[in-house]
Image (tube, rainbow, N blue to C red; front, side, top):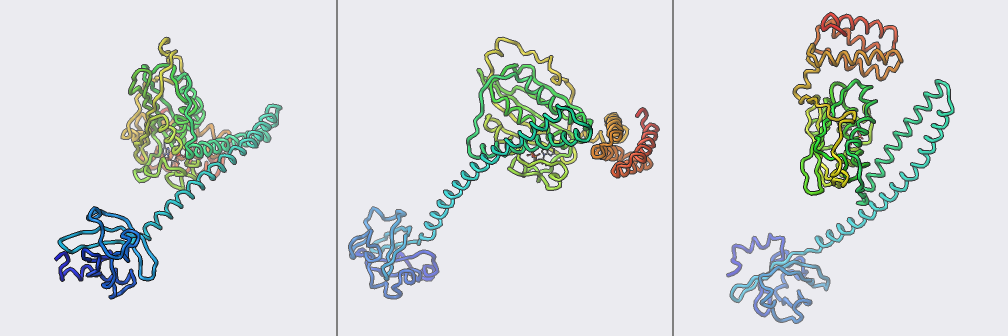
Length: 474
Ligand code: ADP
């Protein structure tokens, strides 16, 4: 017996149609689902296979050809009322008894069709959206550039103090807006797979130097230090997309500046591979800033992602930078990695593949004349970052001095926002100091926050005196 009595009850519970039939296609047994789904009820025993599978068997008498036996096939199964449904089925033969297992796949096929339709619709929507974003951002550039141009003209013609301040702010707003527009434009091009990486000769050392230079005002304003080390075996002239490489490095560097208030930023570039004209460079941009926790790490490199909403409020930004950067790095056949500890600092590393320019083979690298390169100082690891906050260590004293200098400058020009940041840094740097010193730093921050010049100066001087007593020479 192919189907024993004791298994009939299991067959009745099956989600498949199960039929037992003889060599002439006469049905000998049907499970509950077969009786119900095909609409014959108990009378199914009087039906032959040919009636259930008219397209496959053509005649009412006769069974499935022997070569289909054991193979999973697809077919159409007909109900008593003439309607049909697609099935996936398999026929098993043993002696003079045959079994057919069939499953109704109408729903699955419909779902597959729906999925294909949805995918096509999504692709179409994405295409339309990308075109729209590309057009709108392109159109936005013209008025922003127009405003910037006219404001620059006004500034060049000479304007008085207050008006100049307002115009400077308008210029900064235009620059911020241009940066956002460019990010959105890049992002939509990358999404649409329309991004082309240029292959042009450029001076690698100048590129790094220029990128660092553009960040120097922000680095100085925050009282940070920067170190740049470049492996001298890297040829001076390379072939690749200078603009995009600058964009990548600048994104990591400006983030490092943005998220660091105390300590260092370090850039290291090494040559990891050179084969014929092809060269692989490995960059590390580290900082001693706020750091990123492992959970937050997962969100990075995704579009529109900032690790948390309070960061957006405090530091600004669209969260597109790293998503674009990652894709640009991949287009340059590299990858990106992040090492970070919350509260201690971050270290972003990435590789890119470029080509060595012909010029490089003739001229030897002459990197020494570039301002920021190869200062050969060691960047502290995440552990030693703690030294900045251990009251009285040379690192801590140096930081306090630097922040006190910046603070008094900001107070003098009444740049209260910046002054508040420095006062806050100082309060953090004296966290482990004696109580009176801590209290004094706290009061200073309060007065600076209120923008009270006289009280702030008074508090500044009293903190300075306490610091001199404790660590000398402020
Ligand atoms: P945005 O343009 O908003 O800065 P990014 O994609 O460049 O966007 O960065 C996304 C988020 O990653 C930032 O908002 C910040 O939360 C985190 N981040 C990036 N770089 C650093 C860093 N050096 N230190 C700490 N957090 C960082």
